[in-house]
Length: 261
Image (cartoon, rainbow, N blue to C red; front, side, top):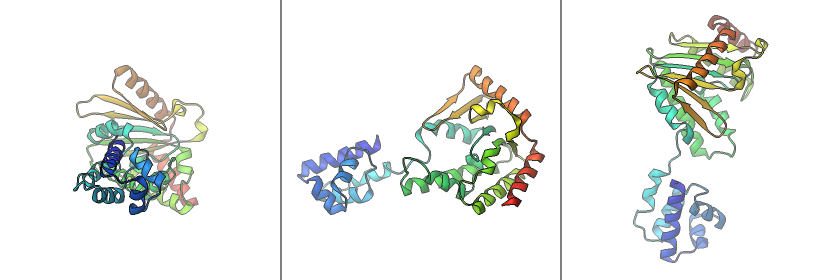
């Protein structure tokens, strides 16, 4: 909505000043279709476009002021509520079958995953989200918060970058597992069918001891607070913990994989 509103303001100021899209694009260094996309909110209006439009249209800083509202979001819109509750939670338990959890990704892994996003993210958004993902990891430093991660074998075996980068990611996992408040368990391929095959989730416990569950797909995330839904996820998590390797076995397993790279 911020893109659309800002783009529409550029269009209204441009038309009021009698400036064509061609002229605005020529002065700002953009093609006609690029300017059109920015005005229609299909592309984020750039700082360069705002600067040129502000000067050409005599907006006296009113268009340029929009840049503060056009900065990339740290997280996808659908995960905002979850991020807020995660930052306050006293306990965090999750299962992730295919990816290293965001709280345990090193910078190389986070960057490789965000750069593979489709449709592609612009460079500014990638940098903002890499920084945000690494910033989230400060939660692990709070020793009164408990973290339990169950990670599928596919995640610890599959390199999203080079082999050397994946080795550094595995060593990063081992370093995190040394924290007293962090438990990491691996779910091996040979454990057969289990509830985790239905996808990832996160369970949170708030300071008021309320239970929340979060499930995320490719295009949306859902945060549950109703006891019935949270109970279902909690029961599945209990079954997954029974099938996963123990924390000690998991550390040895990850260490062996790292040695082989």
